Length: 236
Ligand SMILES: Nc1ncnc2c1ncn2[C@@H]1O[C@H](COP(=O)(O)OP(=O)(O)O)[C@@H](O)[C@H]1O
Ligand SMILES: [Mg+2]
Image (cartoon, rainbow, N blue to C red; front, top):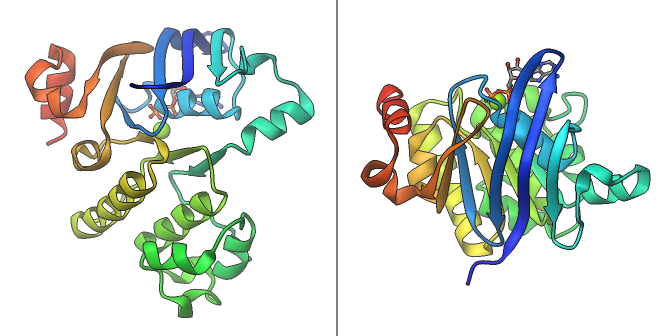
C-alpha cells in the first residue's frame, strides 16, 4: 500500500511574465524513488525548489504529511520544514574553503564512517579541499553530505550530468544501493535514462509546465506518451 508523503495540487510558479509551472499535480509516495524528466528549462529544478521550500510559489497547494500547505509556513516553521530535505545540487555545491571533513561535519548527524564506506569515499580524502578532487568524487561527497543529515526526502538534481559514462555508472550504482537499501524517499531530476531505469521506481515527465506522463519507470517504453517517447529517443 503506497503512502502519500507529498501531495501537489494545482501548483503554479511564475518568474515575472514567464509561467514556468502551470496547474501542476503530482503525488510523491513514502520510500519510493521518483525521477523527474523533461527538456532543459522545463521547470524540473524549480519544482524541486517549490517542494523543499527554497522557492515560494504563486498558487496551488503542496501538502506534506500533516502540513496542509507548506506555502503557508513562516519563519521558524519554514526553517524546520527545510531540514527534512537532503539535497545534492547540480554542481555538488561544496564549500571550497573548507576541507572535505569540514564540509561533511556541516550536516553531520549520523555515523560518517559508515556513509563514507557506502559511498566509496576513502578516508584519506577527508583533509583535502573539494576543488582538488575530481567531479565524480565531489558528487559522492555532496551525496554523503545530503545523506548525513538523515533526511526524510533526498533530492538529487542531475547527479550524473557532466560525468563520463563510467563515473555516471558508478554514481548510479551507489545511489541505487542507498535508495534501495535505506528506502529513502528520493526525487531525482535527470536527463540520464540509466538513472531512471537503475534506481527510480516511478517517473514524472514535465511538459508545458505540468506533468504530461506519470507511471512506473519500467513502463516508459511500453505506455509512455508520444512526447515522452520522443524525448527519451532524443537523448539517446
Ligand atoms: N530565479 C529565477 N529567476 C528567473 N527565472 C528563473 C529562475 N529560476 C529558474 N528560472 C527559469 O525557469 C525556467 C525553468 O528553470 P529550471 O527549473 O531551472 O529548468 P530545468 O528543467 O532545466 O531544471 C527556465 O526558463 C529558467 O530560466
Ligand atoms: Mg535544472
